Image (tube, rainbow over all chains, first blue to last red; front, side):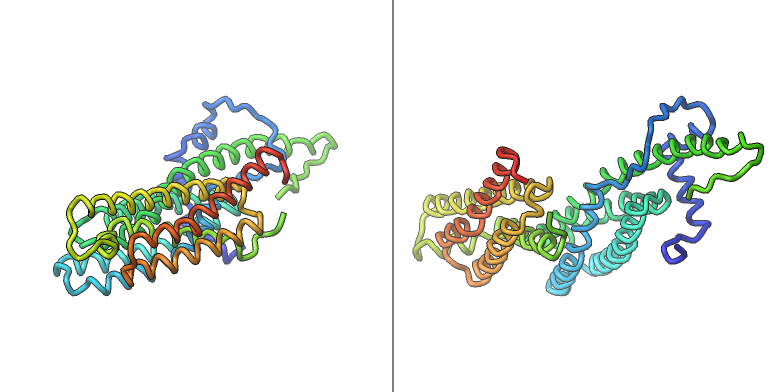
Length: 202
Length: 138
C-alpha cells in the first residue's frame, strides 16, 4: 500500500477539497442529511466510462506527444518569438500533468480512493482543460491541420473525463458516507456478549 | 467473453488514426482536387470535384462515429472477428490516406479507400449490432 499512497498532507488537502466540491460527505458528517441507508453489499463504485476513457487515453497519449513534437519542430522557425516560448512551455506542462493525472485517475478509480480521484479531477479541469483548448483554438500558434485533428481528439478525452470524473467522485463519496453509517451498527453488534470487541472488517 | 488482449487498444488506435487523417484531409483537400482536374479548369469544375470529396470525407467521419459508438458501448468491443476486420481496414485506410496526402493522389481514388476502409467496417459493425441487439446472440 505504501507505494500507491499520496503524502498525508496532500491527502488531507485533497479530502477537504472533495468535501467542499461534493457536500454530501460534509453534510452527513454534521448530521443534517437524512440518508436513506440502502443496502450496499459489496458494490463496486469504480466508474466504468471514466476507466474506459483513462485506458484509451493512456494508449493515445504517446502518439499525441510524438505527433505534437514533430509538428512543433516543423513550424518552430516560423513562429513568433513569444509564441516559441509559450508553445514549448505549454507542451512541457501538458506532458507532465498528463502523466500525473492519468496515474492518479487509475489509482483513484480502481482502488476507489477519493483523494486521488479528486486530485485527478482537479488537474483535469484546472490545467488540462484550459491548456488543451488553448492549443486548439489559439490561431497565433499557427495551427496545422494535423494539429487540429490530434488536439480535437485530446480535447474530447479531457472533456469526457471532466464530466465522468465529477459523477465518479459524487457517487463514490456518497457511497463512503453510507458505508460509514452502516459501520456504526457493525461496531455495536458485539456489545451483547458483555465483552466489547472491535469489528474486524477492513 | 475473450479477455482484453491487444486487439481492443489496437482497434481503437487504428480507428483514431483513420479519423485523424480524415479530419486532416478536410483542410488539405485542395491539392488532391487539383490533381484530378485538367491543367486549365473552371471554378465550377473545381467546386463540383471539391464537393464530391467533401461528401466522401463527411460520410467517412459519420461512419467512423457510428463504429466508435458501437465500439465504446461495448457491443462489438470483445468480438475478435469484428475487431480484426476493423483493425485491418482502418490500418490500411490510415496508410493509404497518408499516401493520398503526401503523393497528392487524384480525388477519385478516395472512393476506393472509402469503400474498402470506411463502408466495409461499418457494414460489419452494423451486422454485429443487429446480431447482438436483435437476435440476442452473446
